Length: 113
Image 1 (cartoon, helix red, strand yellow):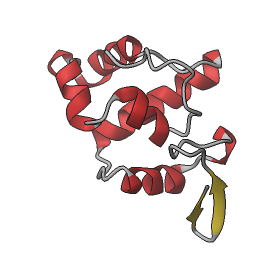
Image 2 (cartoon, rainbow, N blue to C red):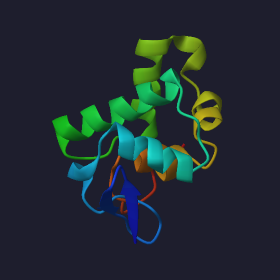
Image 3 (tube, rainbow, N blue to C red):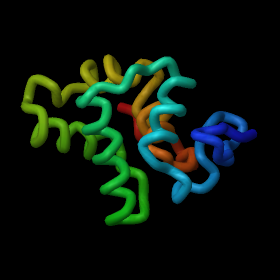
């Protein structure tokens, strides 16, 4: 399956995750978010950039608990909750946040809390 973004096709698996994370950019993220029916806000981007940074540094997708810690540091204690994370990504951190961040589908979705 492919997704066309600004005249370029990016490869997706059968669940809509990027096959090649290096094809990710902001336009791809916005297109993936649109497919997920998510309007990206600054809070969404905070999570997406955290996931990408964590992956670049450690070559692994961060579990949700690490995302919550990052939210606490960047957005404050009141936004560092599972409820808030699900308000951003209703179908789950692993299923939507990681997808929009351009990650391959995690082998195990122990990412969600």
